[in-house]
Image (cartoon, rainbow, N blue to C red; front, side, top):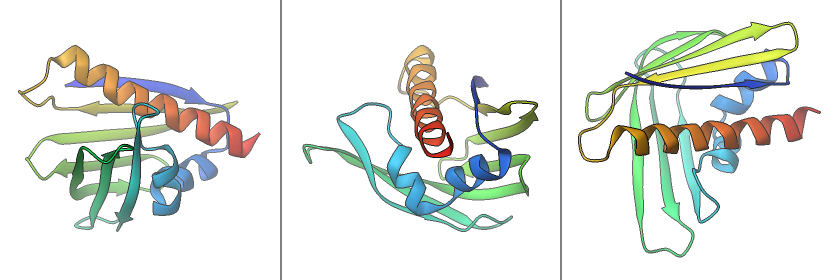
Length: 136
C-alpha cells in the first residue's frame, strides 16, 4: 500500500462534504493545473458507485476513475475498490484544529510507485487548498 496524507484547517463536516459531493469533486480533483475533472458522480453508500472523468485541459487525454464503495462510516472512513480491483482506504481523523486525511491505495503496475505517490499527494494537496479556501 502507498499512503498519502494532509491536515486541513476546516471542520470535519465541511471536509466530508467537499470530498464527497460531485460539484465540489470537479473543482479539486486534479494533480496539476493542466488537468481537470469535467464530470463526477458519486453514490456514497456501501455498494454505491462513483466515477470521475479526469482530462487534460488541452483535450488530448482523458480517463475515467471509477469504482464501488465497500465501507462508508460518516465523517470517518471511506473504503472502495477501483474497477481494476485495487483497494483504497480514506480515513478522516478529527483533530482539535481540523482534519487529517490519510489515504492508502494499492499501486498499479504500469507506473513507478513514487510517481503514483506524487500524483495522489498532489490531488490531496489540491483538495486541501480548495477546502481551506472555502472554509476560512
